[in-house]
Length: 510
Image 1: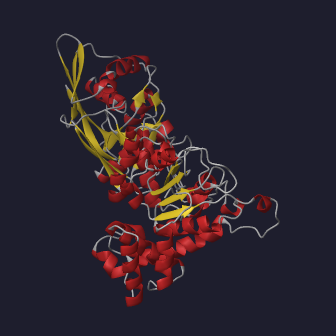
Image 2: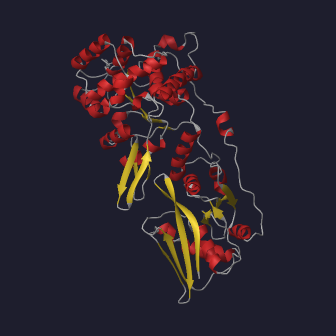
């Protein structure tokens, strides 16, 4: 006897329908699974057998052949346990009624209870896109699955409950969720109002937030680089529902979705340690998973003390920065993960951290300083739009009574206003903020008057700027103009942008 049950599997960040075909025939009792399943899929034989028995049903002593179609695509994970059990019980006629357009996803415990699985959100989205009207998921995944509208989600606790539901012996309401409630009160524990001084660094971070630009902060230990970076997400606009959905999909696939958080509504802030491997940073592995650059999608990737990172890990950032996507190729296919993030780098000027500092003596040799600073290659620095010195706050300023600094909320208002100008300007072009401008779009949207053009051309010659560096100055100038509400780029906007590009810092060894 043959039965067919729909399930879902994830490929990259998208899902596709898997048809679980189960055939029962006479012969020596066996249980074979074909269709390019990994070890976890093949181990389902023992989980399914025990779950069926312990749920009060009879496991057939026949030759069982299972095919996971399409059979030419590698499949992994434990999500096929439930559809496998459903398929076998259909063949033994334990399930008497058949519901159409329904998919099943879930891992089975040996006692028949259902456990949650990773990647539920992309699976439910994929099911909806393929015209499937209902999906059965473990109760643990109910909230995450219910984020998707337009498909009925039925959360179940065990196999017996699923069978009773399919036979019409148990009425279960589809699970719904109020999505808007997750966006109502997005609060941060930290704020820019807590930062004393550092007006120049704050200005740079505001420009970076408004235009989606990358930043390098250089200065001695204790100057406030990490403190500023951690507060940067608080001035970014709130995630839209579509952005939140895409970010949540990535975290769901990676198995990093916080418990009780079906939808991520706060922009990600990722700060990996400098010992991170290349694979962990950009993604990969035998069965590719998203790395830090994808986990920072629509948010911030902060690399503290960038010279301490492995050189190959640093250099591999170039492609994600340019293409905003990471493509990982393996024998069993190519996987693409989005990586639209703002990169913030920080570094000390030397191994001891005090080269160029007025209050501490540097103990590093000339060669040590050069070697340390040369760990950041020119091509990577060229991809950083804004360079800024972060100077230590003078001791007398710590205890000085002063006007409170601007709050993150006040800065965010200006950032949102500038972003709205950009969305209106680039409507229908696939561009969302200034840092994404390329090619002819730069000429169209970053026009300069003759005097400003002459000034920038002279700077191009004097400071040996690359073509990329020249373009980045134009993009930053466009953002500065947007923050002022100016329609056209003026001389002062270009001058300020150039200042952040050409930092004649006392911290850089000449």
